[in-house]
Image (cartoon, rainbow, N blue to C red; front, side, top):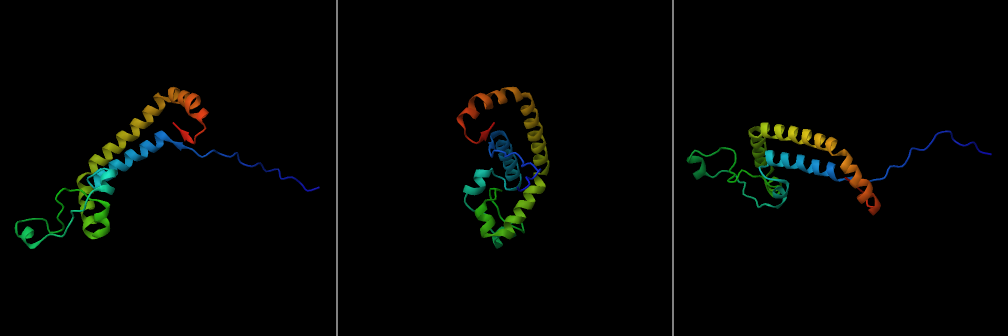
Length: 140
């Protein structure tokens, strides 16, 4: 008779999506896109392109030597159509908004940690009595 392995299999973990962790990730993505691109996550994907190289008339009037961006917002279409100008605009926005991004990220992190700790019992009750009986792969 063949010997059975003494090694135990690891318990299977169910795959589920955490609503609060997903919300926290969306908040971080929004902070970064507002700080670097000047618009929220939705605007990053849906806005029209207006980034362009400066014209001679603009430069003679004392305009920027690097790029012209009337609304200070960068979109995905601008990043694809003109990546070198978009990178310059993103770098300028990043330098200008670094304090905002750091402060908002810290506030988001502390806020989510504190709220998860304070609301642990009510969230567990909702998970146990409402979400789990539905049998969907979602955690609160």
